[in-house]
Image: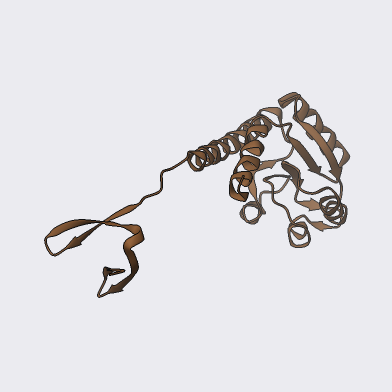
Length: 196
């Protein structure tokens, strides 16, 4: 099996295995009551979601991301005890979507520069969080389905072309590809030179 076929099979398996994965969530929140509220809302919104970690500061979040890698989704407060959460994105690679949760609307425009899929004002309620999680899952399914379709397209065996049709004067000729020496362009026209 050639390496590209192996790569396609591995990618196909990844897509097949991730259609309904367990979603792993990181919560970044420095206020205990807000953190507890988010945990309750997440569990109520979808009991299958897994909170893989909670952090309370910029520094702790950077360390968590460097140690654990990227979760599927982050719920992140903007103003943390040791600064604004935007510093996290400068120090650690964040590849997943982020739902920002804050008591202030003044950071709204800044948030959308950093993987933001929604901006929820505190106190976060179950209805708003459920709608945001639905939005996340819809986006995930959209891109996953398009990715699956693309993989299926490339996995279908295709017959390679053995001939090419060219125009010579007013007539069209069918030329075997093995008879082509090279192509060149001149004045926005493409020319074929055969081996003879």
